Length: 78
Image 1: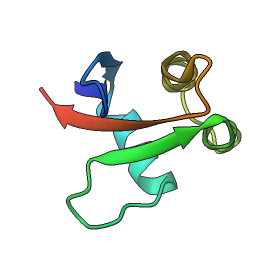
Image 2 (image 1 turned 90 degrees about the vertical axis):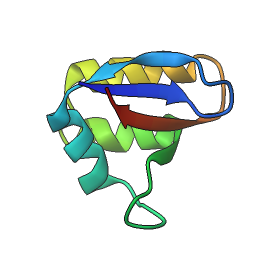
Image 3 (image 1 turned 30 degrees about the vertical axis):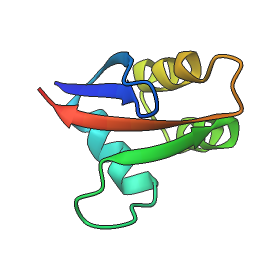
Image 4 (image 1 turned 60 degrees about the vertical axis):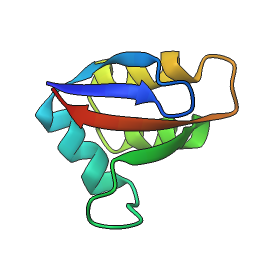
């Protein structure tokens, strides 16, 4: 399983599958090959939803955003 955290606070946001991680890697821009973080905002969540992201992933990202404009998330394998 893959752990997602709020990069700024270190707060655990939840867990995603390897498939969800690969979906993020395939659909979001990475700054370098070993990049493990992404900036997520409402537009990003909508894009991922349209691209066929799992409901669990979309719900987790939506919940992580809460009422914020955007959030930087970081993933790690456990």
